[in-house]
Length: 211
Ligand code: CO
Image 1 (cartoon, protein in one colour):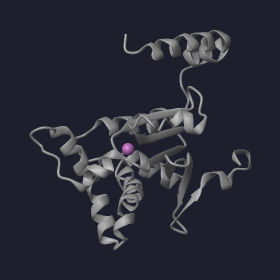
Image 2: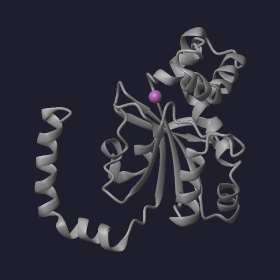
Image 3: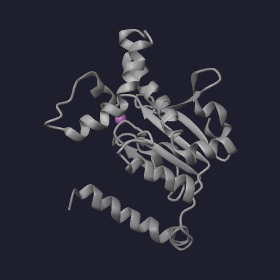
Image 4: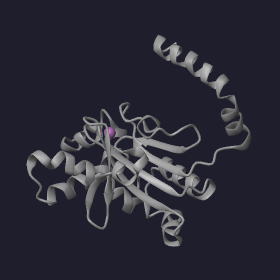
């Protein structure tokens, strides 16, 4: 068994499963109907359900290193398969791409990984490399480059998402909305990108319930 804490956690979950059995029975019997697809980083500190309070059945999760969406033409199809399933089969209304501060995947863009030692990391990070190039070209101060790259990486995924016909079509017909979020590990806050003002604004500002 992996660790005692996981087993303890499982025991607690079993208690919750029994006390909330109607919810779990419904999810099992009726199937999933999430309204939101979450595309986030695999980082163990950025737990979508923890930071959003989402319950089982609410988020269709996709997590990978540095919350990257390979373009539809890419050979890497795991992410695309999840996107097509979420949009075409589950009919989600929203896709949230959530980056985060202190992202190791983005930090790794500052160095050249050794393809002989870690070929998959090397190939994967090539997909995120345009974010660093754009951030460098923006002329941002050296001390702001890391955060700028993290933000740019989120926004680049908008373009990549739109290379999937189901996403582009959903946006055109108004049934699907893409959101860019940034989770700050130091403050526990989430900011959303506003395309009109090009600013990142706390999502709590737009929801009285969250304030
Ligand atoms: Co990360």
